[in-house]
Length: 272
Image (cartoon, rainbow, N blue to C red; front, top):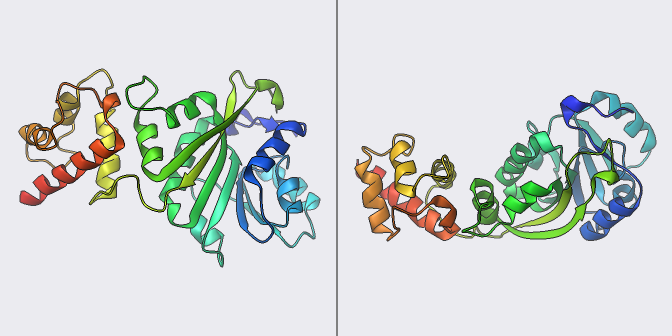
């Protein structure tokens, strides 16, 4: 089966890296596991043999027949032809209340799928994902570095991150031009920082990192209407209230600082 460029397909081959991923995941009999993009079944075989209840989501209709034939008669395997950007993961795993996810995500949609998985965190316990190495660099980055940004804050707000290992281009067909990395994201029982309005936290983070070269204040001033503020001066008052230097750049802010700023901005909106 030829990989389709429009779907960003790079099929994992051989047994070495699939086995490493499966060992890292350590699937248990009876647990619900969602596999996004089973492709040619490099991981699926081991998942099914573990006895886990495997729900495989595949977008490519041309791959459905071979996957269906290969795992026909396996009661713990369910194949869903769907777009991972559209499915409700919590509905999908019923009657189970939670599941783990494993996926080799296409580079072109990895970030939106990751965002959607985090949005369904109420029913997902852990994500073991293979992503472009640069994406994992951003996910695991600490404040102050050039890789630290919106994705770092979003993931670290809701997950404990653990970088596992790199996967070279030669492990795929066709071989991509970049390295991949496998990362484990454990959903935190509670967010890393409490906020009054989770949606406002995400919107504020987007605004703070909208133009990385600008200061925190200048980004807030440019986005004050999206934040529901009456004027740009409100941004200055909010920064003063949380004792954040307005001349800093967003890449220096911790998750806790962004959460505190979110709550102060929320209070200012309530005063309007």
